[in-house]
Length: 219
Image 1: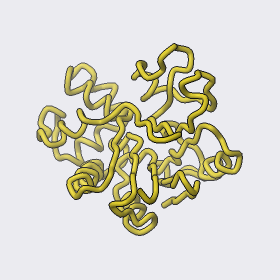
Image 2: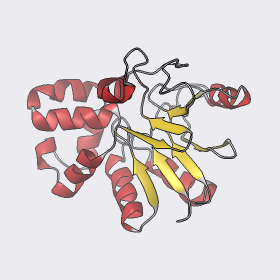
Image 3: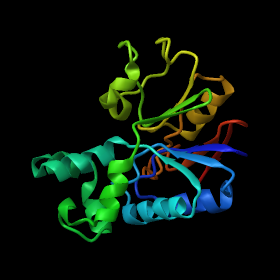
Image 4: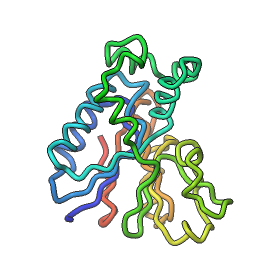
């Protein structure tokens, strides 16, 4: 393996994802890429994002796809339509429109298989990748899947976590703050730079990190 990448919350920002992967990091099959979840909602090209990830996997790129809270909201709505209002509040309308459906039950099996296959976290060498974070207060933080998609924190003291570098998304930060974490050799690195919030100063970027060199790439 040559390089180890992670990309933060994509939220339907397909054009940025394509530019980031194809032209900025120029991903090849010797690289490993961990996607940190929240591929859908809010942005207007959620289907294109999922199609692209599936296409990379089918072409045998080394892609690890984690689940975010937005994918969990989709799956909870699939299980019970009563959950739809919460999903709608979090940007589901754009996702349904992108897939040209009115209900998640209309989506094809190919996409359901993708959403159901997403991992809660990924451990590799000294790195832990997760959408949000871990429950630092329990004996085994890898059993609390709720915290992995909803809760994040800046430091960890749990012995199973304290010697790891934790890479996550979920809570948008400015690109300036993102760079500051690397300058300070932070144990916890947030790379969600709010690609869907283009109207907010300092946000509106989709960011990848190469972990061995600690280089950031942003679009």
